[in-house]
Image (cartoon, rainbow, N blue to C red; front, side, top):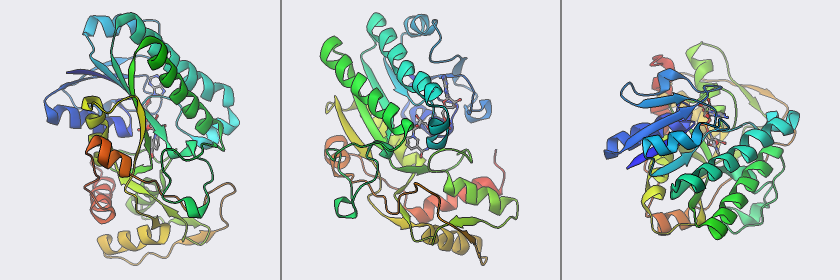
Length: 309
Ligand SMILES: NC(=O)c1ccc[n+]([C@@H]2O[C@H](COP(=O)([O-])OP(=O)(O)OC[C@H]3O[C@@H](n4cnc5c(N)ncnc54)[C@H](O)[C@@H]3O)[C@@H](O)[C@H]2O)c1
């Protein structure tokens, strides 16, 4: 199977491309390298330096004989979307439309899309872990543009028969993650440790997140390309809450050193608890995360501290 990976030079893309190679399929990367890097793409993988909005996309799908698309490229930052909503809209909403139009014309049959927990917005604690059918109330333009992308996929399926799988990722972490953007707290901590700088925790550190290792997300995406349970939405998560202090303590144990974070006032708009239900993915995709926080942190810290970049 030949898979076009938009955003394949980025963090999650780099894990997914390696996963595809492991399964013996052919990944083709399309990336404009705005946040991604060439060093993230394994040497034998063919790549196109191209924007998803480029008119040559249709030719690429046709010439390469692409079977399906994994769409990871786009505007990924909540804060940025609040400052630059127009740019966020162009990259995400216009971006997916451009891809769907190219698919419609070239008859590429399936797309797997990287959505986010941000589509749910602020969820009452009694509703944790959040299920896919929970009310969606994004609190940022990023969440809104991702939700709109989901809706376009749904309509392109109904009207043109293009198959899709939407995957709403929890907080993804792992090797090669950038130190900006969504869910980057672990890579930010790891970078601080690698530079012998202290870390800063905003708030009391007891706020929780559902941290999922990027290798597990990559396998979830691959499974979504094969499944017959399509044209629906799945959360990809661990369904486990870990606090920032849990992360700090785990890092301290792995690095064999005492860590005394600097505490600052909590950031406005940060949610206190977050956890996504993964039952639907377990039952519908026969997928489950394999790497727990301790082992995922070990791999991530080894990458940042040994400078395997
Ligand atoms: N990292 C997380 O925790 C997380 C959580 C939820 C959802 N997501 C989603 O997963 C996807 C991948 O995220 P990531 O963390 O790997 O981000 P990333 O920034 O590392 O990767 C995005 C890649 O897309 C490329 N790109 C951006 N705009 C492009 C465009 N217009 N044309 C071509 N290439 C473009 C970038 O150069 C980069 O290589 C994103 O859509 C993001 O919204 C990520």
